[in-house]
Image (cartoon, rainbow, N blue to C red; front, side):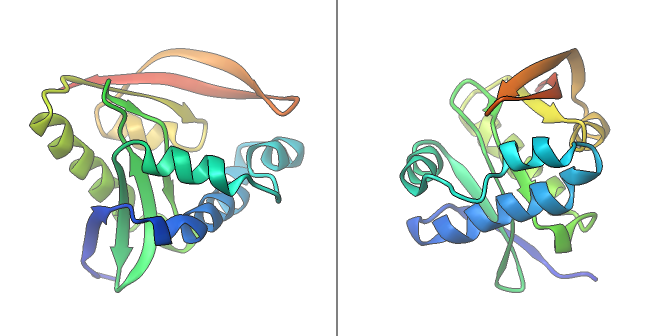
Length: 157
């Protein structure tokens, strides 16, 4: 498959698609690294749409499209923090996350951000490592009564 990946800014009408993409990515992809109870805590069936709208609309959020279909999304906070990087389960391994990260690099360079950092899941850690991020430390975080292992990672630009 050699479809062009288009990266664009988040629009309010993307909200429900991105919520569904997030949940599907966690449930279908991250489930290989986390238990069913962890997955339920991470991607609950009921979500607060207002919180999601505020979160996505409150910082630069980037949407990846392939053939007109939303294939992934990511964001970048002003301090260089990448909070979210999710790719639809059907688009894994096709360069979507890499295209999003390239776009984040460009955005960071234009805004004089000299360091990117994230808290990568077990699932996402290899992607970030392949793209120059280094593990600062493993950490266990709690969410909705479940404890998750993730990795604080950073990359200088």
